[in-house]
Amino acid sequence: MTDTESLKSNAPEQSNITLREPRAEDGASVFDLISLCPPLDTNSMYCNLLQASHFAGTSVAAVRNDVLCGFISGYLIPNRPNVLFIWQVAVHESARGQKLASRMLEEILGRTQCSQVTELQTTITKNNEASWSLFQRLAKNLDAPLNTSVMFDRKTHFDDRHDTEMLVSIGPFAH
Image (cartoon, rainbow, N blue to C red):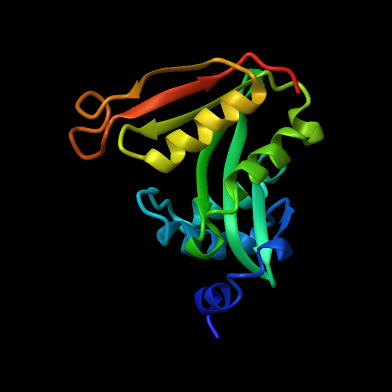
């Protein structure tokens, strides 16, 4: 049985999802999961290996029955230890509708590595409704302002090959 088949057959078992720090052995599964979660951009598998190892303390893996069903990659911005940047949020379709992404974000923010964090940033394209909802809900839960601006413009930065990425900043907040 493939990982995807296993996820689908175990869909009702939402309470069996464990959140943990990712590890290098998760890299290939992260790559596969992200490829199943459009509109997320796929990175190289090597990039996913680095996310799951070098950035494990600020990333999270959601696992059900030994199968990866969710992943968030994040990192503390160099020279700004109070700012957590969330790179990607991926939740397998079989695990959606259970607020798993919100639980994963809370897990990261609750870690010792993030004890200094007072602001969270991410980028979202204008048409990614799921991400907008997730981060608007997070801002509300943190009782923090949410501000947006253009981070990477379609023409200026992407040479018309990718939609504009809006910088979303949530904070300051205390946790």
